[in-house]
Length: 267
Image 1 (spheres, rainbow, N blue to C red):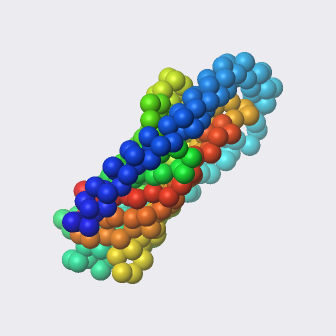
Image 2 (image 1 turned 180 degrees about the vertical axis):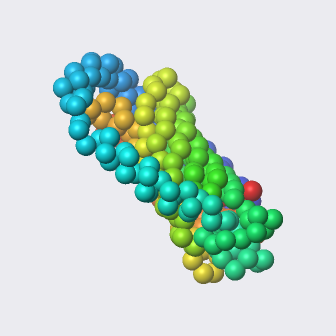
Image 3 (image 1 turned 90 degrees about the vertical axis):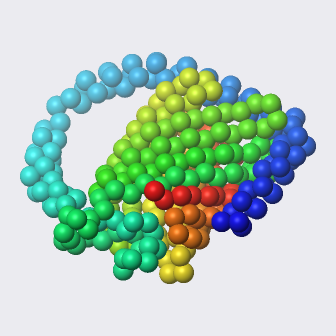
């Protein structure tokens, strides 16, 4: 724990000093990105009208109903059985269980943990006069995942912030999980509200190390979007973990990317 606080206390002042050094370049880049977002957002209403016309022409999909019936009758039954069998460790690498994250097996309800909650924050430098802070909350209720994503890209006097809430399903196999989700994406700086979709994965290795990968895409217009890719290798100590990784953000056609330091806590 002392190592975590020492690293944070060193990084935060250094990021503020570096932001002052790159004031002009970083501020102008963020302002230009905000302008591009607003321009793309203005295109969306016209594109939605054209999409509605195309959907009316394709409304008679004959096989859609059959596919839906197959999914709910066959795959749906298997999925519900899978949800019933999932159980989580109190926290990753908890000494009182013989698995790192989750198990799929019958257990007495008194000993099952069907929820898992993780909160994490990271600080990244983009090596262009801008910096980023990303906060994530990942909650699991058996095989259902809810995740909250918040990011602020900032320089000396300008910032660009986004907030996304997503719901999806997870494939959990021991020390591996893969989740797909959809939700909403709000660029709080401009008030732009859009659909989002993404994937996330965590892989738990021996030695209290785990890999955390998160990808999120928001649709701005037919020609542009916002992509967030975050990857980190983390070391767990009890319920805490500290890691290093890389954040890549493509916003319209502007790239904000660089290394990051991450701290997480499991509830």
